[in-house]
Length: 606
Ligand SMILES: [Zn+2]
Image: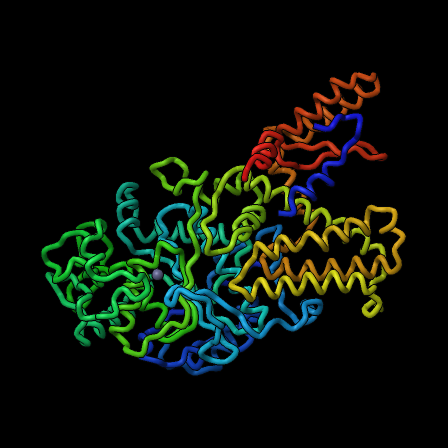
């Protein structure tokens, strides 16, 4: 530990150690399931610039009303599920905003779970993307595994929009399911009401993590007619059978079963998760419709009252909004089998030409290198994490690993992410403060070549990394160079004297801001998010800011009295709690830092 007398600046150390309005949610309900292969953009009611229109529901509705869509019974219902988070900006992808990002690479390579290789992304309809991501089963607060799925797909969504695709992003809510019914029965409440409460909780989590709302968020309970219609098609095509009011998918009728998970039917037969049910023709057969039981929500159907099985909802709702043929289907890696395998079987059984171009799955979250589970007691909800760490730090952590790699959650990882985002926002805040003092008009063509070089290199890394299966960690690491240049221009003697300094600061800040926006890491206010990061650090240290000011005063008195051991001890005690004291000619201030004991762990780590 550096002595207090040396007035060591933790910022320099840190830079070295860290290199490593109300939003309208549109709910569309389709009266009848769209039949095989109707191109979704011809029926999907979003106009070409739907993203801009999303923030204006009335304009959106007006355009919708002009279109005659006889297959839709409920054209529009706008519900305000979301409230805007105070610290994050709704990104705008106006061209003017992306000026410093040159035209992107024409090729986006994405890993396809189906083929087990990276492929060039080619949308089925030029310029348009249909993307379906399996949503949560809403019966409890969502955990950091969920956060990872939806943050990663939010980055893909934002990047596709940055590439100027019109994206129809569908993410469902499972609000009818065994787990929901079991939880509701435990609590003695109505299952659908319970589920809707947790849908709202999930939406709040998504806002806090700065995830853009999808184009549509369909719910199972609102799509029962479409689900029944789909099951009838599957039965009529000979792929399902009825037993006592239950309907099962007959996997032996679908020889391609196992194509996504690369499992054969024998594996499924031996699988311990497959329940033995003598009424099934094959142990791997799965329920499309479950007959009604006492105390469960149920709907009338041609096979008697009941409710859908889990898998059928995603086949029905993806077909309803995107048709049977669309571009990207995503979810967590745990959904490959059986959920997505079953979805493929159902959709192909209903419509032979059903085709999804890319299956994308993200890796697991482990906790201290163990699988996260309630029974191991290492289970963290998003709410628990963002109580102590800023949601932008959690988001930074989640995209700090490649989306397909496993990611290990630990306090040191979250402390490091918090420290890093503080550094980023503090640098940009200081830069912005200087820029506010200058007239930035008429400066466009006067950026020095050295600065342009830095910006171009940063941009090239951004495009190359994102085009290569969304390598976000490389982009985050590449932020270091332009941030260092900003700090040099702000704080070094040489930098302060540099020709065209303000022009350089403005251009670099803009290029970083654009990338942060595409990654979903751009706050609406640097100063606000810095204050929130300080508050989280104080909470983790179990101190108030007044406690810290008192310690700063005690340390100042000790130094006046030349009691250097005492002043060092005060500084070290605070550093151990994650509060770093910063001395300057204007006095002593504080900032959050990684607690010393955790810093040592970080150094020891391989
Ligand atoms: Zn699904």
